[in-house]
Image (cartoon, rainbow, N blue to C red; front, side, top):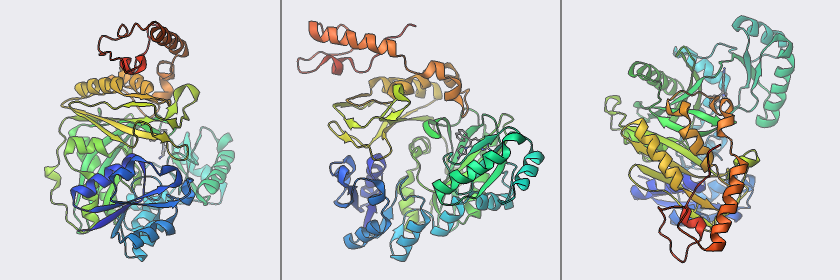
Amino acid sequence: MFKKILIANRGEIAVRVAQACHELGIATVGVFSTVDTGSKHLRFMDDSVWIGDSPPQTSYLNITRIVDVAKSTGADAIHPGYGFLAENAEFARACEDAGITFIGPGSNALSLVGDKIASRNTVKKVNVPIIPGMEGSSADIDDFRSMAETIGYPVIVKASLGGGGKGMRIIRSDAELADCVAAGQREAQSAFGDSTVYLEKYIEKPRHIEFQVLRDHHGNVVHLCERECSIQRRHQKIVEETPSPVLDAQLRHEMGEAAKKVITAAAYTNAGTVEFLLDHQRNFYFLEVNARVQVEHPITEMVTGVDIVRQQIKIADGCRIVFSQGDVQQNGHAMESRIYAEDPHQQFMPSPGRILYLNEPQGPGIRVDSGVYDGWNVPPHYDPILSKLIAWAEDREHCIARMVQALEQYTILGIRTNIDFLSRIITATAFRKGDYHTHFIDDHEQRLMPKFKHQRVALVGAALISLTGKRGQLSSKSAASPQTTPWQEVGRWELSGD
Ligand code: MV4
């Protein structure tokens, strides 16, 4: 087994990976940028090394520097977490060349799944359904036009090296086609350094369902069932759950087997996620492979009992997966809410700054994967995710109840967060019924957006209580102590009744 692993990341995922390392008796090397000198993840490292200035380009994306630190500290392997260099084939190759194990797929598999046109062709060969569309790009707009006529409008133009929605454009008629393809090419060039785009049939309001797969270096492959990630805003997932409210055993089996075929066809090893779109007739289509541990991996861990990060490390070390598909079971229901430092009142702009007070929820079935602490100054340079709140219970209704309570208990003062916004999603009638899709947030904007008026009333109320000293009247739950302020006593609260 590895003796020492460098964790090339920060925040909650670096903490998560360090914990898995220590459970396996593996030492950890943390890395940090200038602004991250006091970051929480470093408390979980045996050794920490400064890798550069605060901008990601000079630190967490600095391939040569990170490989050099791994060499000089004697690390045998690097875990990239998610984001930053996690799906960078050049980085995986640099690790391979330096004799350091990259904990993820090989650089060839990484290149293949990073190329949408190439992966569509690979997937098609093993008879997994792909969205009808082009199987190669073209420099000729007439090829786009004839494909659009064959599959019918609406169509969508996508960047071959794209992901996360960049370079995508929906085209609803022939009149828009040429301009949209050209705009897609320009956007792809500037975002990915490659202007290759292709056309697909546009699927209206699909559900996003992904399968977690593990594949070892001995050809063993298992899937750990699905995660439904349809609740997202601007291609950023916010709430995920498993099982999906819409899959039955038959469809789960078909999609799971398809996911394993995709991973095997790509000669992919380690943990990977196969994303599918599900349309209203319950047809599923391969979308893409995510070649990393995902933000939302904990919900799969909660229902299957499999520690995905531990499996990643063991697979990278050459171990066999010791359980088979028949051993994988979904036990109960799990849901994740992503806690972001962003302001729903200001178009969800990032809200960096000092955390003045932090109360993370706890209790039966509650897990918090957190990258922050009380007093930490959340820097503006990186993704604004603070933590992930995960709830587990024996069924979906109880899981929702636990999530609602835990969000209620979650207090972060000093910066703006999306916690109230998350509560409104979880308590929305359509969500409770499992009746949602990838356009849920747009379609329910009225109900989900915060209401300024009530916040102002709340602020005045709190100020009055503070001045008059009549504490404890707002909430019977709080045990007033002379050391605390009303803000701390009341936790999170909101006036309603519009
Ligand atoms: C689509 C689609 C509909 N039809 N492709 C968005 C991110 C990128 N990975 C793929 N995406 C989509 N591709 C076709 N042919 C709708 C989306 C999409 C989406 C997909 C998954 C989760 C959320 C989404 C939100 C909007 C659009």
